[in-house]
Image 1 (cartoon, rainbow, N blue to C red):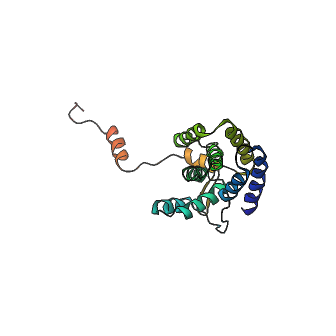
Image 2: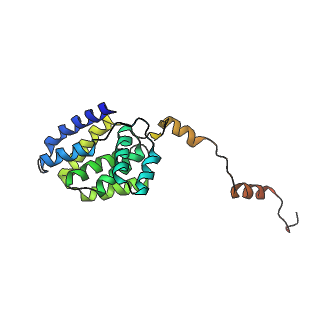
Length: 190
């Protein structure tokens, strides 16, 4: 995981040459801080990050989202992009958030992801869009996306497709409604 972060930072720093309108030192510092995740945790659980976020521990939650995003969890990539956008101190954070939001929307598209992408798109200048596109193309080569990391259980896209196609067993009121359809109706001459 640490190697992936280092490779990503090296690729991203190659795009810094395009950032002539943005403050170079500021952009480099923002990139470094955005993906300087603590790789100490091996057992990454998306639900832990959600619980930390709900409890108000945003620093720990963003750290966990960062690690999960680097590991390829598209949900965490979206959450981390949203976190970067909300806590953006400068324009380079918005560029990084936009590239990360586009990456998260590659495999599993959703309305919430599309809304974040459109909101970020409206705030970017033409030069920042070019920088985002360059950064995004390099991110696609480094990070995977579309994986779901839930504890020790690693679900690839193929596994998720199998789970989605699996026949569901319904409980509760649906059983009652389905059973009621097969029963004769009362008072209708049956």
